[in-house]
Length: 561
Image (cartoon, rainbow, N blue to C red; front, top):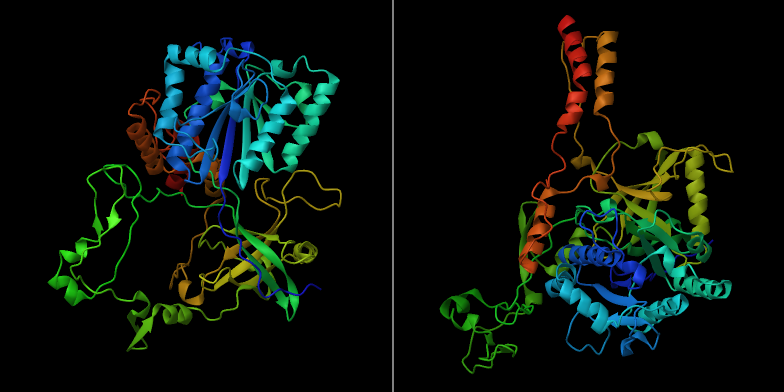
């Protein structure tokens, strides 16, 4: 058995998200798409798709997400493209960047693409003067350039390459060239880079993409360029790596993942009205009596220069101001058992913790039917951590299979990090669903494919949080409904029942916020449809009309009862 290491490191929720867009500029990309009402070329459609992605990143993503733009199959090659022929690395910002071309996006970056989209002269200037027309690059060298960029230019946790091209790109490649490209594609995958190809104007991907074992899908205008809703792209990062204690000196290590997170409006940031740069906030604790005597001195913490390009400096005034107070010595007054007790921050945090023992501790097991449909928050996913303790996956799988065989759940005490309070949780084993039995003869479950197979961690309420909501009827007997009413009600419920996934419904307030942010940043809003309805949770009146027959039948049954 593996022994639990006492100092398992916590995986911080950090790291950058990097995306590189590759746009093909060969002659076949300048053909007009016959299915497009606006008669745009495939190159324009690719730019529009990238513009939508960049816009969504600016409005809803974190500052840690960076983006790059590369043109390939062009006549010119610039210095930044690592001497790869017919590949042009484009900088979305004009100022010099000694670190790399992957940068955080802003409104200017989106407006830069708007110039190419809505002004034909700027687009032709880009194609002829900057890129030098069309040519043909080596696909294997393009994949090598992708690997080198992520390896030497940025340290990103999530790496994504998106290529906009057509089937004609690899149409004339011989066996040797395809073999070389296949090797580089494998190296890209091994480097942890997800590579996706969008094929414009093609009904299906050619077999050559399958032979290369890369992701390639047709790009449809109605699906990929329709009115899309903005949402944050949350990377799958482990909340923490914690010990899983099965008993004395017996256990393994697991990682916790949040599969669903609540999306909220981002917290605003203070900007300097002159330079539009982020302001650094500093808090100084002073004595109340001194601050009331000298209110002006407490407000002159910084001196602002006349030149707006210079940053404000901390004031060096010789006038004595309110004396600073050591915030570590501050104490809060808490009423405990009717008595007021003074506690500092460390003492208060320690009092809230029952124990300093971090991790997951098994309390016992209960039948699966014992778990009620409580919902305190979204569940977490638990996965073995082989990096911390070797052999964790073996114990994890053994416990998972035994819980499935006996149809039981595990009760445990969880404290994920030092800042978290103790939680009572249920470890529910869930097997991936499917209509066909597996090779081992296991019965399929009702768990959808989008769920991860393994243990899911559900928070349980404490005794004081639970209340009985069942109706209590005194001196009264429930009447038994007639069979016809039950059948009519069943038909009515069937009409109300539909498939559900969280991706089908979005918070209308968030969507209005993102659209407003984009309108304010880009100073124009040419593509907003006036008929667009932000609220997707309004009643579906067409569905209500289709249910009129069963509704009338249900009313008639109640009238005759």
